[in-house]
Image (tube, rainbow, N blue to C red; front, side, top):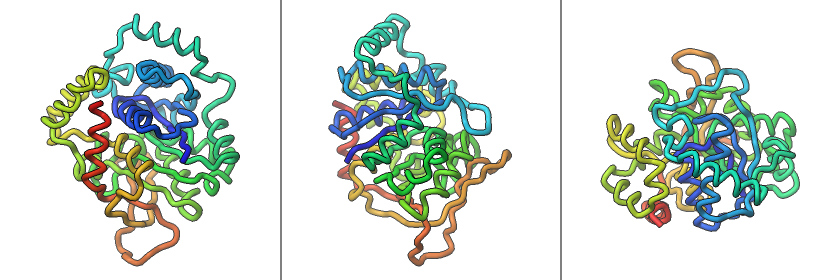
Length: 313
């Protein structure tokens, strides 16, 4: 299956892209959105990974600079100013920019939303969403048919069990642009149900023990280098290392390895305040429903091991 990957270019986004590209997933394009870092840093981080892997055949597109309604809220205390822990020095970045320009990696002639519409309408590609959903919502507003034509929509976002990361109950991607999340959920739930990888799955169910994660990263100098600041921050406050975006990528290419999935109605709180961005799930009804979202609750351990193996390569 062909995919577009929509990303805000943080450390775990790059890990997810690394996993997809090393797994030979068919990526027809990468669309960038402001989120963990500013849009221009996101573009640089994506091209830095492509440069590292010497992959020049995957086009990159510029998307939304900021959310639909709220101001952009970044997390430099975790991801650094540039989204990769400020680990890439200026000479390296200039080398990447020169390489990207030479191979025409970044396509300035088409914005992300237009590219998404074009590919979904023509080729029914799937979309893997790793950042705030601004680009996807803009594409759906531009062409509502893509909600039906998109072959698969896998989203990392939300907090279905009240476990937040940017607030008490708010997960970052949905919190930053709750209006975009609302649009995506509402436009797809009747036509092409979303597969949702939420923060609870990433941090509580499948968090990786720190010792295991550190041993894994030592085998991959590139990923180890960009994640060392994030690792230190997370280690100071959590019990394990979450891999939200890599898990989202895993669910996209190995859907049969999701061993526990429930289909539930979800609404996204868009108003400012304590519950901003919260995924309000109707847990009351255990019967099969038609207009729901597939919430991934558990992934089998063999596929988790495969993910970790690829990241260590």
